[in-house]
Structures are given as C-alpha cells and as structure tokens.
Length: 557
Image 1 (cartoon, rainbow, N blue to C red):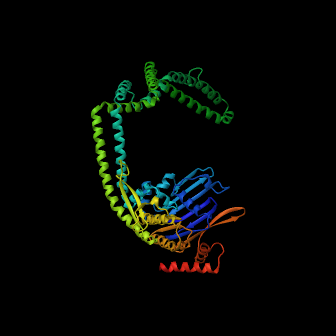
Image 2: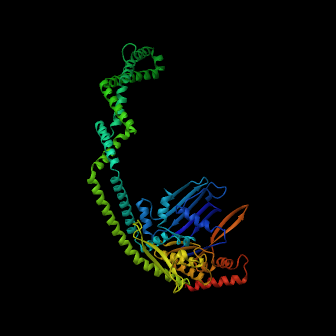
Image 3: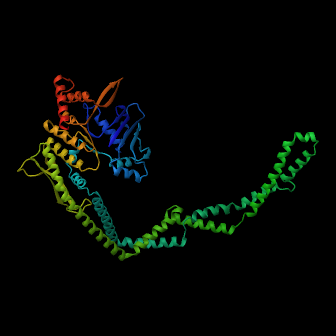
C-alpha cells in the first residue's frame, strides 16, 4: 500500500508531502489544477520516462519519493530479498535534473529505471482514463484474459518454447540450404584452425612472453648500471667508502673540544659509511643474479613476432587469438558433424514443436474456462452499471499460424440489447457505453489482482447520473480490502470515498503553484458543492453536497 508521496520542485509543485491510507481516496480539483502532476510524480517513482520539463521552472532538479507498506506483498519482499536489499520497508526515489538526466534509488541503494519498473509491477496498478482506447486493440483482450486466468508461468513457458522452436527451425533451414557456403566455410575453417593449432598459443602465454621479453631485453643495461653503482660504493680507490673513512678519521683526530662540536656530523658520517657499504653489497648481489641469455631473448622475440603476424592475418588483437581459436574450433566441429548434426537438429526442432503444441493446448484449456468466468464477471458488473440487458462474451478463435501467444486469439464482444447480434467492442458506437464496459472490465481485472493498491485515472469519463453513484460504490468496494485512489470529476464518485484529496492551483508572487491537501468533513462538503454547481457556492448546492456525503456514508455503515 502507498503510504507516503513526497514531491519537491516537480512541474508547478514546490514542496509537498502526503500521507495516504487504505480504503478509497478520491482525488479532485478543477481542470488544469494538477491532478495529472500527482500521477506523473507517482509514475516517475515507478520507472516512467523522465524529461527536463518535469523540473519546476528556475530549479535545478525535481526530487520525488514514494513509500510503500509491503507487509502484505510477499512478491515485492521476495524481489528485494533476491537483490539483497532491505525488505522491511520499500522507498522508491527518483531525481530528475534540469538537463533531463535522472537517478533512482530503492531503499537508499542506487537502482536503474528498469528496477523501479520491475518492482513497481508488484506494488501498484494504474488504470488510465484511456484504458477504453486500449480495449479497441484486440491484442489487449488476450493479455487481460491471461491475467485473469492467472497462468502467467504457463504462458511464459509456451512463448519460450515457441521462440526456441523458431530459432532452431531457422538454423536448420539455413544449414540445409547453404551447402555450398558450408563447404567453403569448412575449407577455410580447417586451414585457420590448423594454423592456430600449430601456433598453440596458451591462455596467458602472451602476457608471459611480453613480460619475459621486457626482462631479457634490458638485462645487459641493468647489469651495467648495477655494477657501476656498486663501484661507486666500493672500498677501492675512487669509491665513496674510502673517502668517507678519511673524513671520519681526520675529524676524529681533532682536539677533544673541537671534536665535541662535530659529534653529530661524525655520527652521521659513521652511519653513511655503514649505509654505503650495505648498498655496495646489495648491488653486487643483484648484479650477480642478472643472467644474460641472448638465445632465449631471440626465441621469445621470434615467438612474439609469430603471434602478432597471425593476429594481423585474422584481423584481431593478439590477446584475442586464444578465444578465436576456441570459437573457430567449435564451429568446425559443429559443421564437420555433417548430416548427423542436421538429423539431430531436425529431431530437436520436431521435439520443440510438439512441446510447444502441448503447452499451447494446456493454455487453451485454461483460457476457455477463464473466458466463461471472465465474461460472467464482467456481465455482473455491467448489470450494476445499468447495462443489465447487455450480453458480454469472450470469443476465442483459432489462429491461422502458430504464435508465441498460443493457438487462439481473444476478442471481447457485446450485445447491448437482447436479440441484437454480438459485436466487437471496436463497433460500440456510444462513448458512454464504452466507458462503462471498460470500467466493468477493469473492476473485474482489479478484483483478481494480487496487488492491493490501485489507481483509477478518470475511468468514469462519459458516465453521469445514477450510474455515477454506482461507479463510486464499485470503487469503494474495491478499496475495502486494499487501497484505491481515483481521480474523478464526479461528485457522486467522490462522495463515496473514505478520504478526499483536493488539488488546487494558486498564483503566488508571479508564480503558479499547486497545493494538495486531505479535506476534513467541512472541506469535503465545500468541494462536492463546487463539483455540483461550479465556483459560486449557494446554500442550495452546499445542502445538496452535505446530503450526498451523509447519504453515502450512511450507506456504508
């Protein structure tokens, strides 16, 4: 359940923090007041695309966050646990900069927009005001039916099997038709693999050769310089050590009073004698360990030259030769399998085809049962929405060709009155009828959803009168077991809500800002009166609003 929504510098909102509860929350306000801003902020927290226009004018960035209570959402907790994220809370945050770039966090940890979207699928469902337009596309019907049937895993398995079947079938066709190309490819591969076999470059060998070449090529220089440095330290004439000893001896021979003044210098000269002597021994030891091996150096350089020559020939970097060798060897082995490999591939294609058909038939059986239940459930809701004479049905028709979606198509049909033939939803002429049908379908889908938080964005467009009150009752009933937020222009719907969120646009200091607040009872009466009679409130509209609110609250006690 969505418990908090915080918005800063987004669109025309400077700062807003909302605490939300369960049940039904009506969201109302004048046209253009910013109801879409609320849903836009929530959408960004759920991974929708961001742009620079999201940031309030004159600000550097918009900062949005949504907190959800996931105590009753095991799928969301599992999603967080699998990614080693804290699962005792769920805070989604999104920051959009003035340049249009955005960053996202889940429970304080950096996340991708795709992560927000994936987790959001477990947290909340948004039913938009244009959902009825989606119903005009028949591919939507099959997805709605599958969601209702709750066989997502079976549908995914069926689609995955189909794609594996198609991929292997295309590969078999390609191998069967391209025999001349295969023979030419075989000839080239045999030559290339034989050449790489003779090179026999081992994993990590190139790095070792380059390191050894570096060592051997500079061995003579290292020996020469180390010997020179050792001679500089040597105790023979011309070295540093005899001169240091002379300095110590001559200073030590001074009278006692003079020698005392130079005690520190004598001490440091003594230390220097020891350090120089030690340095000389270390340098001689190093020089003794340097080996000159011109024959090995010549072999290493020849080996490196061969590696680079073959790499240039194959147009790859030298360090890619080992992986190239492996890849070409595997391709050669596959092609040299010949007809045996083709026979095995053909058998695999046939097995996948049969597996897809078995999975598709199982999905079809579930769909047929779900179609009857879905049609009946939608028809019950239509009766509630004053379309009791309508007959709604889910029509399943076979596909002409195999598909990852299965063996059939789904199409919603409706007969508005008894005796009239059933027609596809695309042929429904009345916008009001289509709105009610769309709402009935969304209510049925929501009732079978495992997600308790639902947002309805003006799904009551085209509905009025007594039907509007029924719509409000439907939405309140949905909110009873979870959380329903509905953006509405209808006072009959708003009066049914447990909570009422009002959105208003105000001009302050030459800027326009949006303010949102949960209304108390008096505020609700005033807002319902505005929705009933416009900006000019009269005693009559206020009385009507009070009566409407009291009646709706009594009906639910």
